[in-house]
Length: 470
Ligand code: AMP
Ligand code: ZN
Image 1 (cartoon, helix red, strand yellow):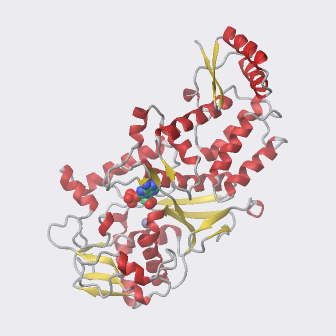
Image 2 (image 1 turned 45 degrees about the horizontal axis):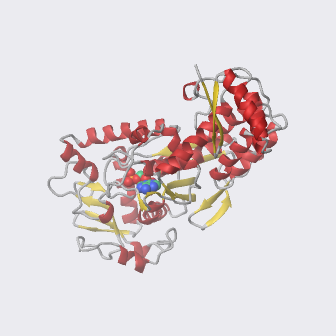
């Protein structure tokens, strides 16, 4: 019953507070995530942001909510990072098409497929809907026309600009004064705007442009921000619950989306805005434009499976920066191996609703419902992995249950090393207890017993690492 669902608290960038989520429809949550600009391979920084969206999706479903998850594909319109609103800047998708000798649609399809393959390798659950920007041009034109009619936009030679001075709430999300935003915009290329802080909704097409569409203002193409207003309103309705993206989308992308959607409809649309922090490398933002990137496909060369990166992402809260290092990746790998060892084993029937499992599940739920506190949830999973009041079957059942949120394939047979022979788990548990009590004589004797069974044990800071000889 929706009434009895656990309460979820989320940090809302708009109010700058962590607040209880109050779905517009009890028990149901609509989420929109800004998806990839599909002109290059996604890097693991981008994927950290999609992992954060996936975590929200999985957490809500674990807690019993019904989720409608929409994540778009940006296949037109997004200009260069440092010059986001320039008429002179080439479209990223078109530029890639030119460089690779393909059509824009081939480029977009190719990199969309690559992005979704990476998401699948990281166990990111598919969204319910992945609308493409190029399929929503009429909706974008319609919104632009409404903004003109509402006196919030103006036309200059076939280009339509949003007049930010007419929208009272402009700057509320990013907490900036319009003055500072002007200073932050690069303006030299667009002398025809009334105000440097204004941004384009629709752009007049110059020659050599491959992707253009007819509009009431002549042939052109959409600005970057209008696509997310059009797709979120169309697929989630005029009011919806949560909108997510990376921290750099707060301004200008989301600030502009609010101005567009609210300006067109005259009321607030999104209840909670959530932003994920960056993945960094050598303390610099991982970015397509600077080239300091790692892809999911690079992880095997570093000696790790993709899900080790998922584990690493869970070790940091989504609102904290996470620095990608090989040491951190190694630590993630042994943490993951430890959970998988505990989760390995035959399927025993365990009633998760009975005590003490229910109590353990409630504690896990508390952690994830507290603004997706994954470091706490993961630490708790490790606590369960060594809880002495649980049987091995109970520990395994709980970890597999938590894995509905963690998404680490904890029970997957192919990821588990050779199964341990009968009796080994019990010896390992006794040895762990002996080591905890600093009884090294007993610990050594138990190691000998394990060796006799064909199990080698390595002691690591994370505990024992057993390997079964075949
Ligand atoms: P883009 O494909 O450039 O539109 O970016 C897709 C998503 O990745 C957006 O939500 C960005 O905010 C996010 N993003 C870009 N770089 C990083 C990074 N280094 N760490 C985390 N998220 C990022
Ligand atoms: Zn967006």
